[in-house]
Amino acid sequence: MASDPSIENPRGKHREDGFPAQSQTQPGLSDETTPHPDHGEDSYRGSGRLQGRRALVTGGDSGIGRAVAIAFAREGADVVIAHMPEEQADADETVRLVADAGRIGKSLAGDVRQEDFATSLVDDTITALGGVDIVVLNAAYQKDRDSFATIPTDEIERVFRTNLYGLLFTARAAVPHLRPGASIIVTSSIQAFAPSPSLIDYAMTKAAQVAFVKALAEELGPKGVRVNAVAPGPIWTPLIPATGWDAERLATFGQDTPLGRAGQPAELAGAYVYLASEDASYVSGAVLPVTGGKPL
Image (cartoon, rainbow, N blue to C red):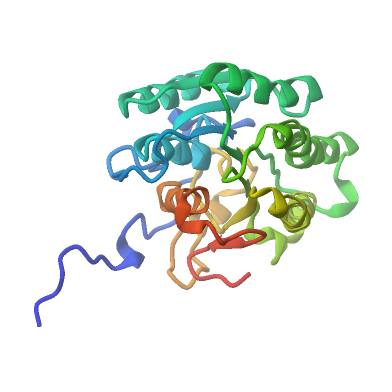
């Protein structure tokens, strides 16, 4: 029987080797990331699954957030992204890609650790798009830790305020505006279920996000609003070279998965589209793993 050329071995779909030694300061930028992550710029094809919807994506300038913004736009959604001010160049490129898909795109610069900014994102999205139907809470911060005993208090605060406080501020502001059929999607992590000691504070926040998703899904279900999470495994984004890992860690990044490699942001986009779409109308309180085969 002839093989189907459209079926590709997932082990060889993207880079099979590790990654070269490199470092960045947080939050990490796409143009300084080698090799450049694949956000689906050339590969994602939409089919109208989110036609006419309006989305807010935090951390939408690069990495997973950019892949989600591209996919949403090509599926017919207008998209507002939030990002740090120093990520403006990346944000501009994401907005350009949204506009190239024929949709409205807008970027909002600020820090989700600040309650005023994280809250204002919702009103600013509604002003720009006329409403909000999908809220993707994706902004995150992680840093490699030498040991638990030496984590500086200000670093703990940065992780918790970015990954939890910012999420809570934006979600709390969004909920009163979400109509039946709307969706909240959180970017959690495999770290919520299989925490690494060197990412202990990050892993704690990701586990808390899972509790948030399950509790809020129960509260909002009677209103017809779904709440879910995606749990990525090792994904090559600008956050990785900005995490502080040494050359050996980067050279082996993602090699311990059953598929034998790290994932690319583009490989997550479909999970977010599914959870935001009518295809997932009976899915709420779920955590969808995209981990290269690593179990949650």
